[in-house]
Image (cartoon, rainbow, N blue to C red; front, side):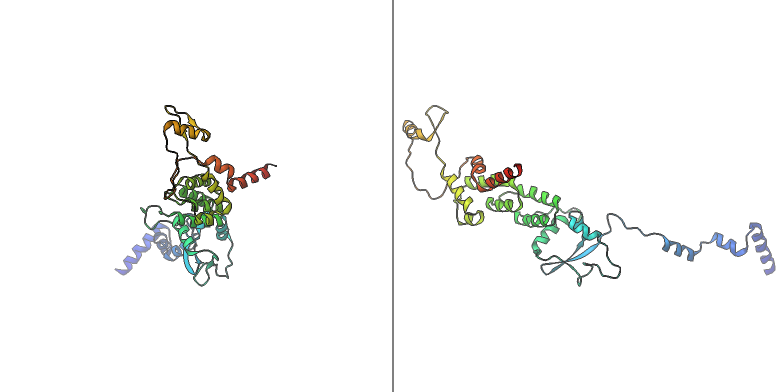
Length: 286
């Protein structure tokens, strides 16, 4: 019985024209060869979702973030990502014991920048709602690290924030060369009911402070002739007041009143910020 089975198997093998083991290898995959071939295949990294995490030390705190978050916006960090690393040396930022130290950077400034640059923790999270001072932190680091798109976004967002102190807006505008903020902010200071104080002197400087006082002191009443829309000048105020039976007596009030006067022309002609700009323009044109 066994001899007959062997004869039948041999006959089958002869019919295929293959030796017994050769035939077996042709129909059954070689597991060992598969493993070797798999290991030899090239492994590619995804262009978008393969992150190089780095550890940063900022103000005594450790941050571990994808370096690509910074590299996408800053040429400084882009060079760091592309810098070749020795195979025998541990890359800077690869661990807490070998962090990238950002000396002179405040932790809170760095955190606000990460809130803007970093991906949300959940897919439906709203964009960060930062205060003006928090956006100043973003603007500071974006300016320092040449993140032009981030700086432009910060400036645009800050410009639209409500209820921002115009004094602080002028300070930031001067620091980062945002000239378009100056006239509206100075106008807001001159038109509001808040008197100029030591705070204005300290934050804006003496030349600007006294120039603002002079502009506000030049306000004068405007009268219309009875039954007419014609505005008359200050030289005719006494006559107009008498004709219109207007009480022109002055009194000491408890606070400064808000006004709706547009000071823009006088601001741009007389304030030191604009005089410096004009001198710079003349120097460049000469």
